[in-house]
Length: 203
Image (tube, rainbow, N blue to C red):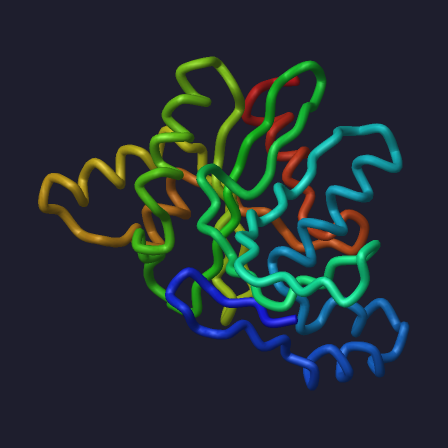
């Protein structure tokens, strides 16, 4: 089956990377190398769920099916589909009775985080969540430095407005360090953002 992005470009899984990961030793010092931010967060969320700490899930990416074959009357085979652009953020759920909603992004930049990584519809969604009293934030990863930060949506929205008013189109690393909270990488959980939420909201 062929999957395509909204721009028509074909989606090709990175088989070599998958095979390489499978051959890595089980030693904890190696087990997380090469993992994406999404991988780390999915493992973290599963850790929370299993221990009944929080229930947070990644929202599935919407898919538009454009071609289906029916080789048998009782079966249908999807031959071609497109990833549709998600209308909200990546993750949501509940923690201690509070609605949690966040987006996760990473960059290879060292000194700043480009705002082009976000979309207007995501910004609008975050505004709505904040206005309803939900806990909304972004998790930002500087991949080359292996550094992860939690930045509350209120700050991201201010930076977005600054860009829209003619200001810089990125958030400087200094600004993220000043207004965000550094999340040290661990083993279990890998990215313990709930611990940061506890500190910020005094749970």
